[in-house]
Image 1: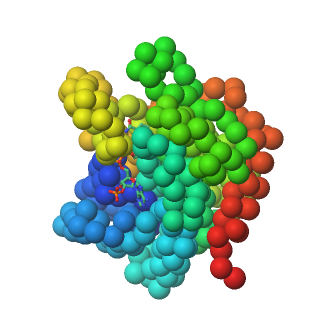
Image 2 (image 1 turned 90 degrees about the horizontal axis):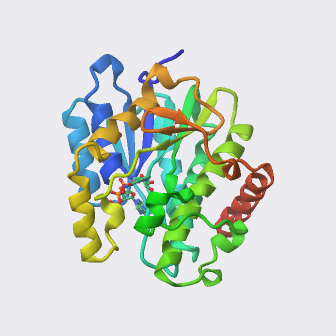
Length: 311
Ligand SMILES: NC(=O)c1ccc[n+]([C@@H]2O[C@H](COP(=O)([O-])OP(=O)(O)OC[C@H]3O[C@@H](n4cnc5c(N)ncnc54)[C@H](OP(=O)(O)O)[C@@H]3O)[C@@H](O)[C@H]2O)c1
């Protein structure tokens, strides 16, 4: 078993609810147990603020500005991260937390590259980042993707109207014109992007260098985070009320669990896309392990990323 705190953790979405709490949990660790931090998020006051807070706790931290809706910006961000590691501004890269995520009220919103926004931000941007940084990791290292149980239906989610994933060819998932435009389909797009993350994690582990382990974290339902930003006011009010029920997950409780997955020895042997719900490993549904879909997603992702690359 190894500890990961002797290096650097890169996290996307450090300005959001879960990401911010994970950053602060890492920054607040005792010095000997505190990683350096690369905070990759949209440029602006929220990024400046979480950077300042992490530094105030004593962490060596750098911010890298990028909108994950633009693959050109993701590539530039990966190049910056590489530079910061290689020139010794931060210690060796030991973990990447692909935390940023988005959901919306429409499937018709597009990324800067013209892809359906949910698939683009939740999956494609992180696939680009990981592709560009995979040779920068110093093993033992960890890649942690963020999943969501919304990928499958259960009785509670059916009652709440949370739509499960509906798998389609990944080129269609990236194509907003191929998606129905009703509100339910926006929920489907989110859940499907999270199923894609499970498939991607399994294939990534087969291709990752020795010593780079891939796992997926599910933070539990945190009802009142930024993910609700495009929801109607009535839903936001309901979510705020649910968030106050004792025992319901929150960024404050799940952020430290995510931080722990990135750095603690307890999780050093996790690999193969192991699915951790808060702090317990759980099996995924049988349809979330599918070699043919995983290979197809990998190849389609490469094709989509290539289609936007400038030689
Ligand atoms: N909330 C839940 O119940 C729940 C359950 C399961 C899984 N999750 C997952 O947990 C992760 C964190 O979600 P959260 O609940 O903490 O939501 P959140 O508060 O909305 O945080 C989302 C983060 O993603 C960033 N982001 C979104 N679009 C971006 C873009 N185009 N470029 C750069 N950054 C972008 C946001 O940055 P800005 O501040 O710039 O917008 C923010 O930092 C997500 O992957 C989500 O799917 C959440």
